[in-house]
Length: 376
Image 1 (cartoon, rainbow, N blue to C red):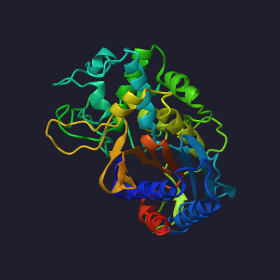
Image 2 (image 1 turned 180 degrees about the vertical axis):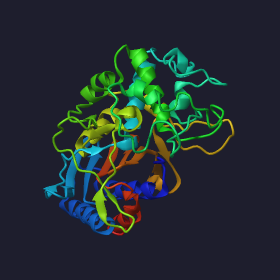
Image 3 (image 1 turned 45 degrees about the horizontal axis):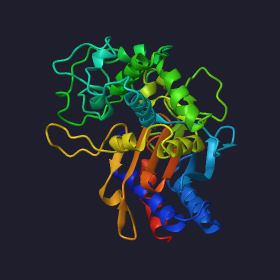
């Protein structure tokens, strides 16, 4: 899912506008604001037919609101709560990016060295590919392959014990779609190469590095790999819509081949803790976060609103308070049975997390925008 789709941007901007204009100086949300958020969530459920959604809000560097609405499991009438765990899909990418940038800060990972320095299993291409390019989707590596011969991708059913080695097999022999550095080409596959670089630079597995150096210092106690064999408390069921618009269970997915770019599982409060730790400088320095929030410059000089693991929102999504505009960064995600969104305003230490168990649920953004912007 492209990280800067207009509908998702509208949703994030709307939620931020509501909360920032109402509670800039508060440490908890007012009862009136809670009612508005509850109403927006309930309206989303009714208009989108999504079974469930969970929301968390960070204000002044603190988690001030987390709640769930609807159902995590329709067949067994299990309600969605703040603790419900959803597939993160591409919201996994900022997590991987932070792990890579920690190694950059430690001078263990050269962002501009050829990726083969850290991942020799990936063949040398006609032009060098670097970790910086991979983080910003400028490496020219393809996204998902639709149909054709070889391993299935979007609906993969094969389980890989090693997500990096297994993931590389999907694309290592494929030609590039563009010259590295030339143009933005969104690629979940490219993030598998970043995971490979993290393993080499850190001296431990990708998942061990992330769990030790991202989740532990952030206090993220429930975020885990979306392992279809594991018994994971509070994991939601996953839903989609049939061609005639009826809810159904999503197609099967084993995401073990793409953990770095789309295979983590979490809940709204844990992602809020990720935002807090990142904005507090506990994961990377403020200077490094600013670097991650700076859009890259493709060599074809096309417009690019993606930095290093984060989309950089601009235009209609900028937060404007008292005629001052604040930069927002974030990411969206979508895959079988999930639609996810995170966004942060680092200067204000403010963040929003929205997770739903319906794929393709981004179409509720304009409705929430109307509700929130009209309820000042």
